[in-house]
Image 1 (cartoon, one colour):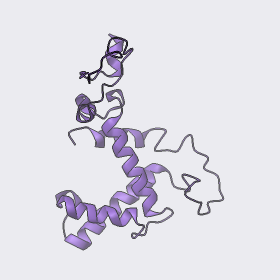
Image 2: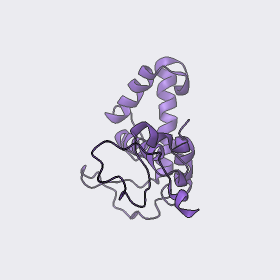
Image 3: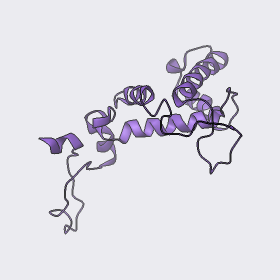
Image 4: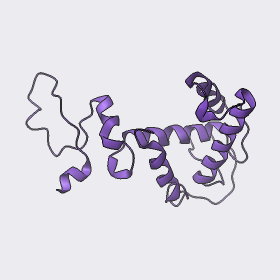
Length: 158
């Protein structure tokens, strides 16, 4: 929550990404290979909704509690089932949902704050990533590691 990842994902799912506006969505919808990418008649926002409801159902069935109240190890157990396709979803593999969730979580944690995640550039700070820099001309010749405060895209607009 501290990095704003849920806000980032909600924003993405409400827009072009969640509505698959730049994805070919005509059939046939056959199971593809792992190299063929996204293969579903469902929109990403529909996959997320179904997947999140299934996570909650698995949590209730296994631990008799909401997913958000579980210990980290218990949450990992449930998410691992999705990654291994041990949970059945309609119209999409559970591993596809897990992959989309993982990808969106990482994007929300490490993308530029301009997009609604990575609050206060804290994701970048955790990785010592400097963010958006116009030039490294002053630092490039240094033989030592140069620590820098991260800067976001909007910093260049002022």
